[in-house]
Length: 321
Image 1 (tube, rainbow, N blue to C red):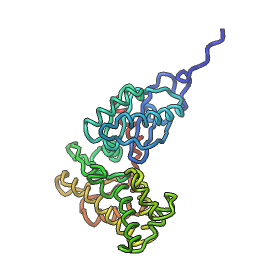
Image 2 (tube, rainbow, N blue to C red):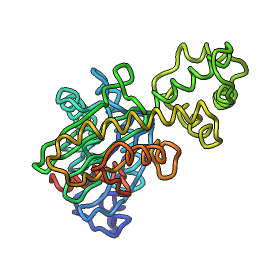
Image 3 (tube, rainbow, N blue to C red):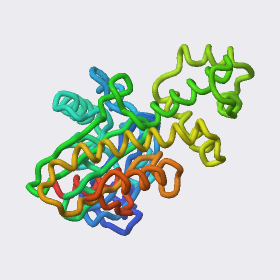
Image 4 (cartoon, rainbow, N blue to C red):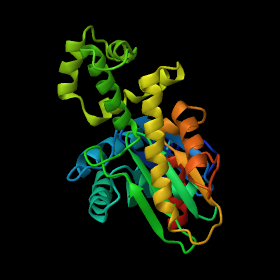
């Protein structure tokens, strides 16, 4: 008798892992995009997919879960595995409080992403990946900004990261809002000349300043944050107003580090890592942050550890199993 066709879950995994291998999931649910990775206990990545923003907002667990589930399904299809996986860790922007974590965990289990889910703040997950012993400070600047620290006693501390209405200084929304301010002042003749207005109009497919005014009336924080690279590009081209904005952003991010240094007794050096799309190596903001950190802190030692947050979440999912 001819055997029935093999189901996807009966076939060999793309990595060669046979049936019965436990599959784990890690995700980065950010304010500008989300990323899901699927892999094995040996941290072999079987699938990876990007999706829309999935940052957690109060009462927004179903919406975040829907985005992560769809992105997870695409990663699972690439990996040739079925959902739910056994265990998932989600690094979520906006999930620094227990209530939001619990709500998103429940929504993701209900959506069938994983049998067991743990939601953590994205900065906490990045911190665990940046330092082998877990001790140090990580500063993240993406749509928002936040810093996390783990002190020598193992205690976790944070500074910033309270959202675009309360802070997130030096992050993408903050810089995008600065770009809009520069454009408006230049339009009125209240500020220095700048190419930022032209850059914004071109990027958004708009024709006039009035079009930009109309755009801002409905723009989301994520859309405003997406304007930040134009400030960095103008700074790279030497524009004075953009350079000042980048310097101001760097000062705000360094202030997060200084606020957390008090949790490290003595005078020994404190390791500092960076994460987030605005602090990629050699960006104007990363360079300004490095220089200001050296000027304002005698203890901080910037390290070049590469932080891939979804992979860090996958590692934690494996450890927690």
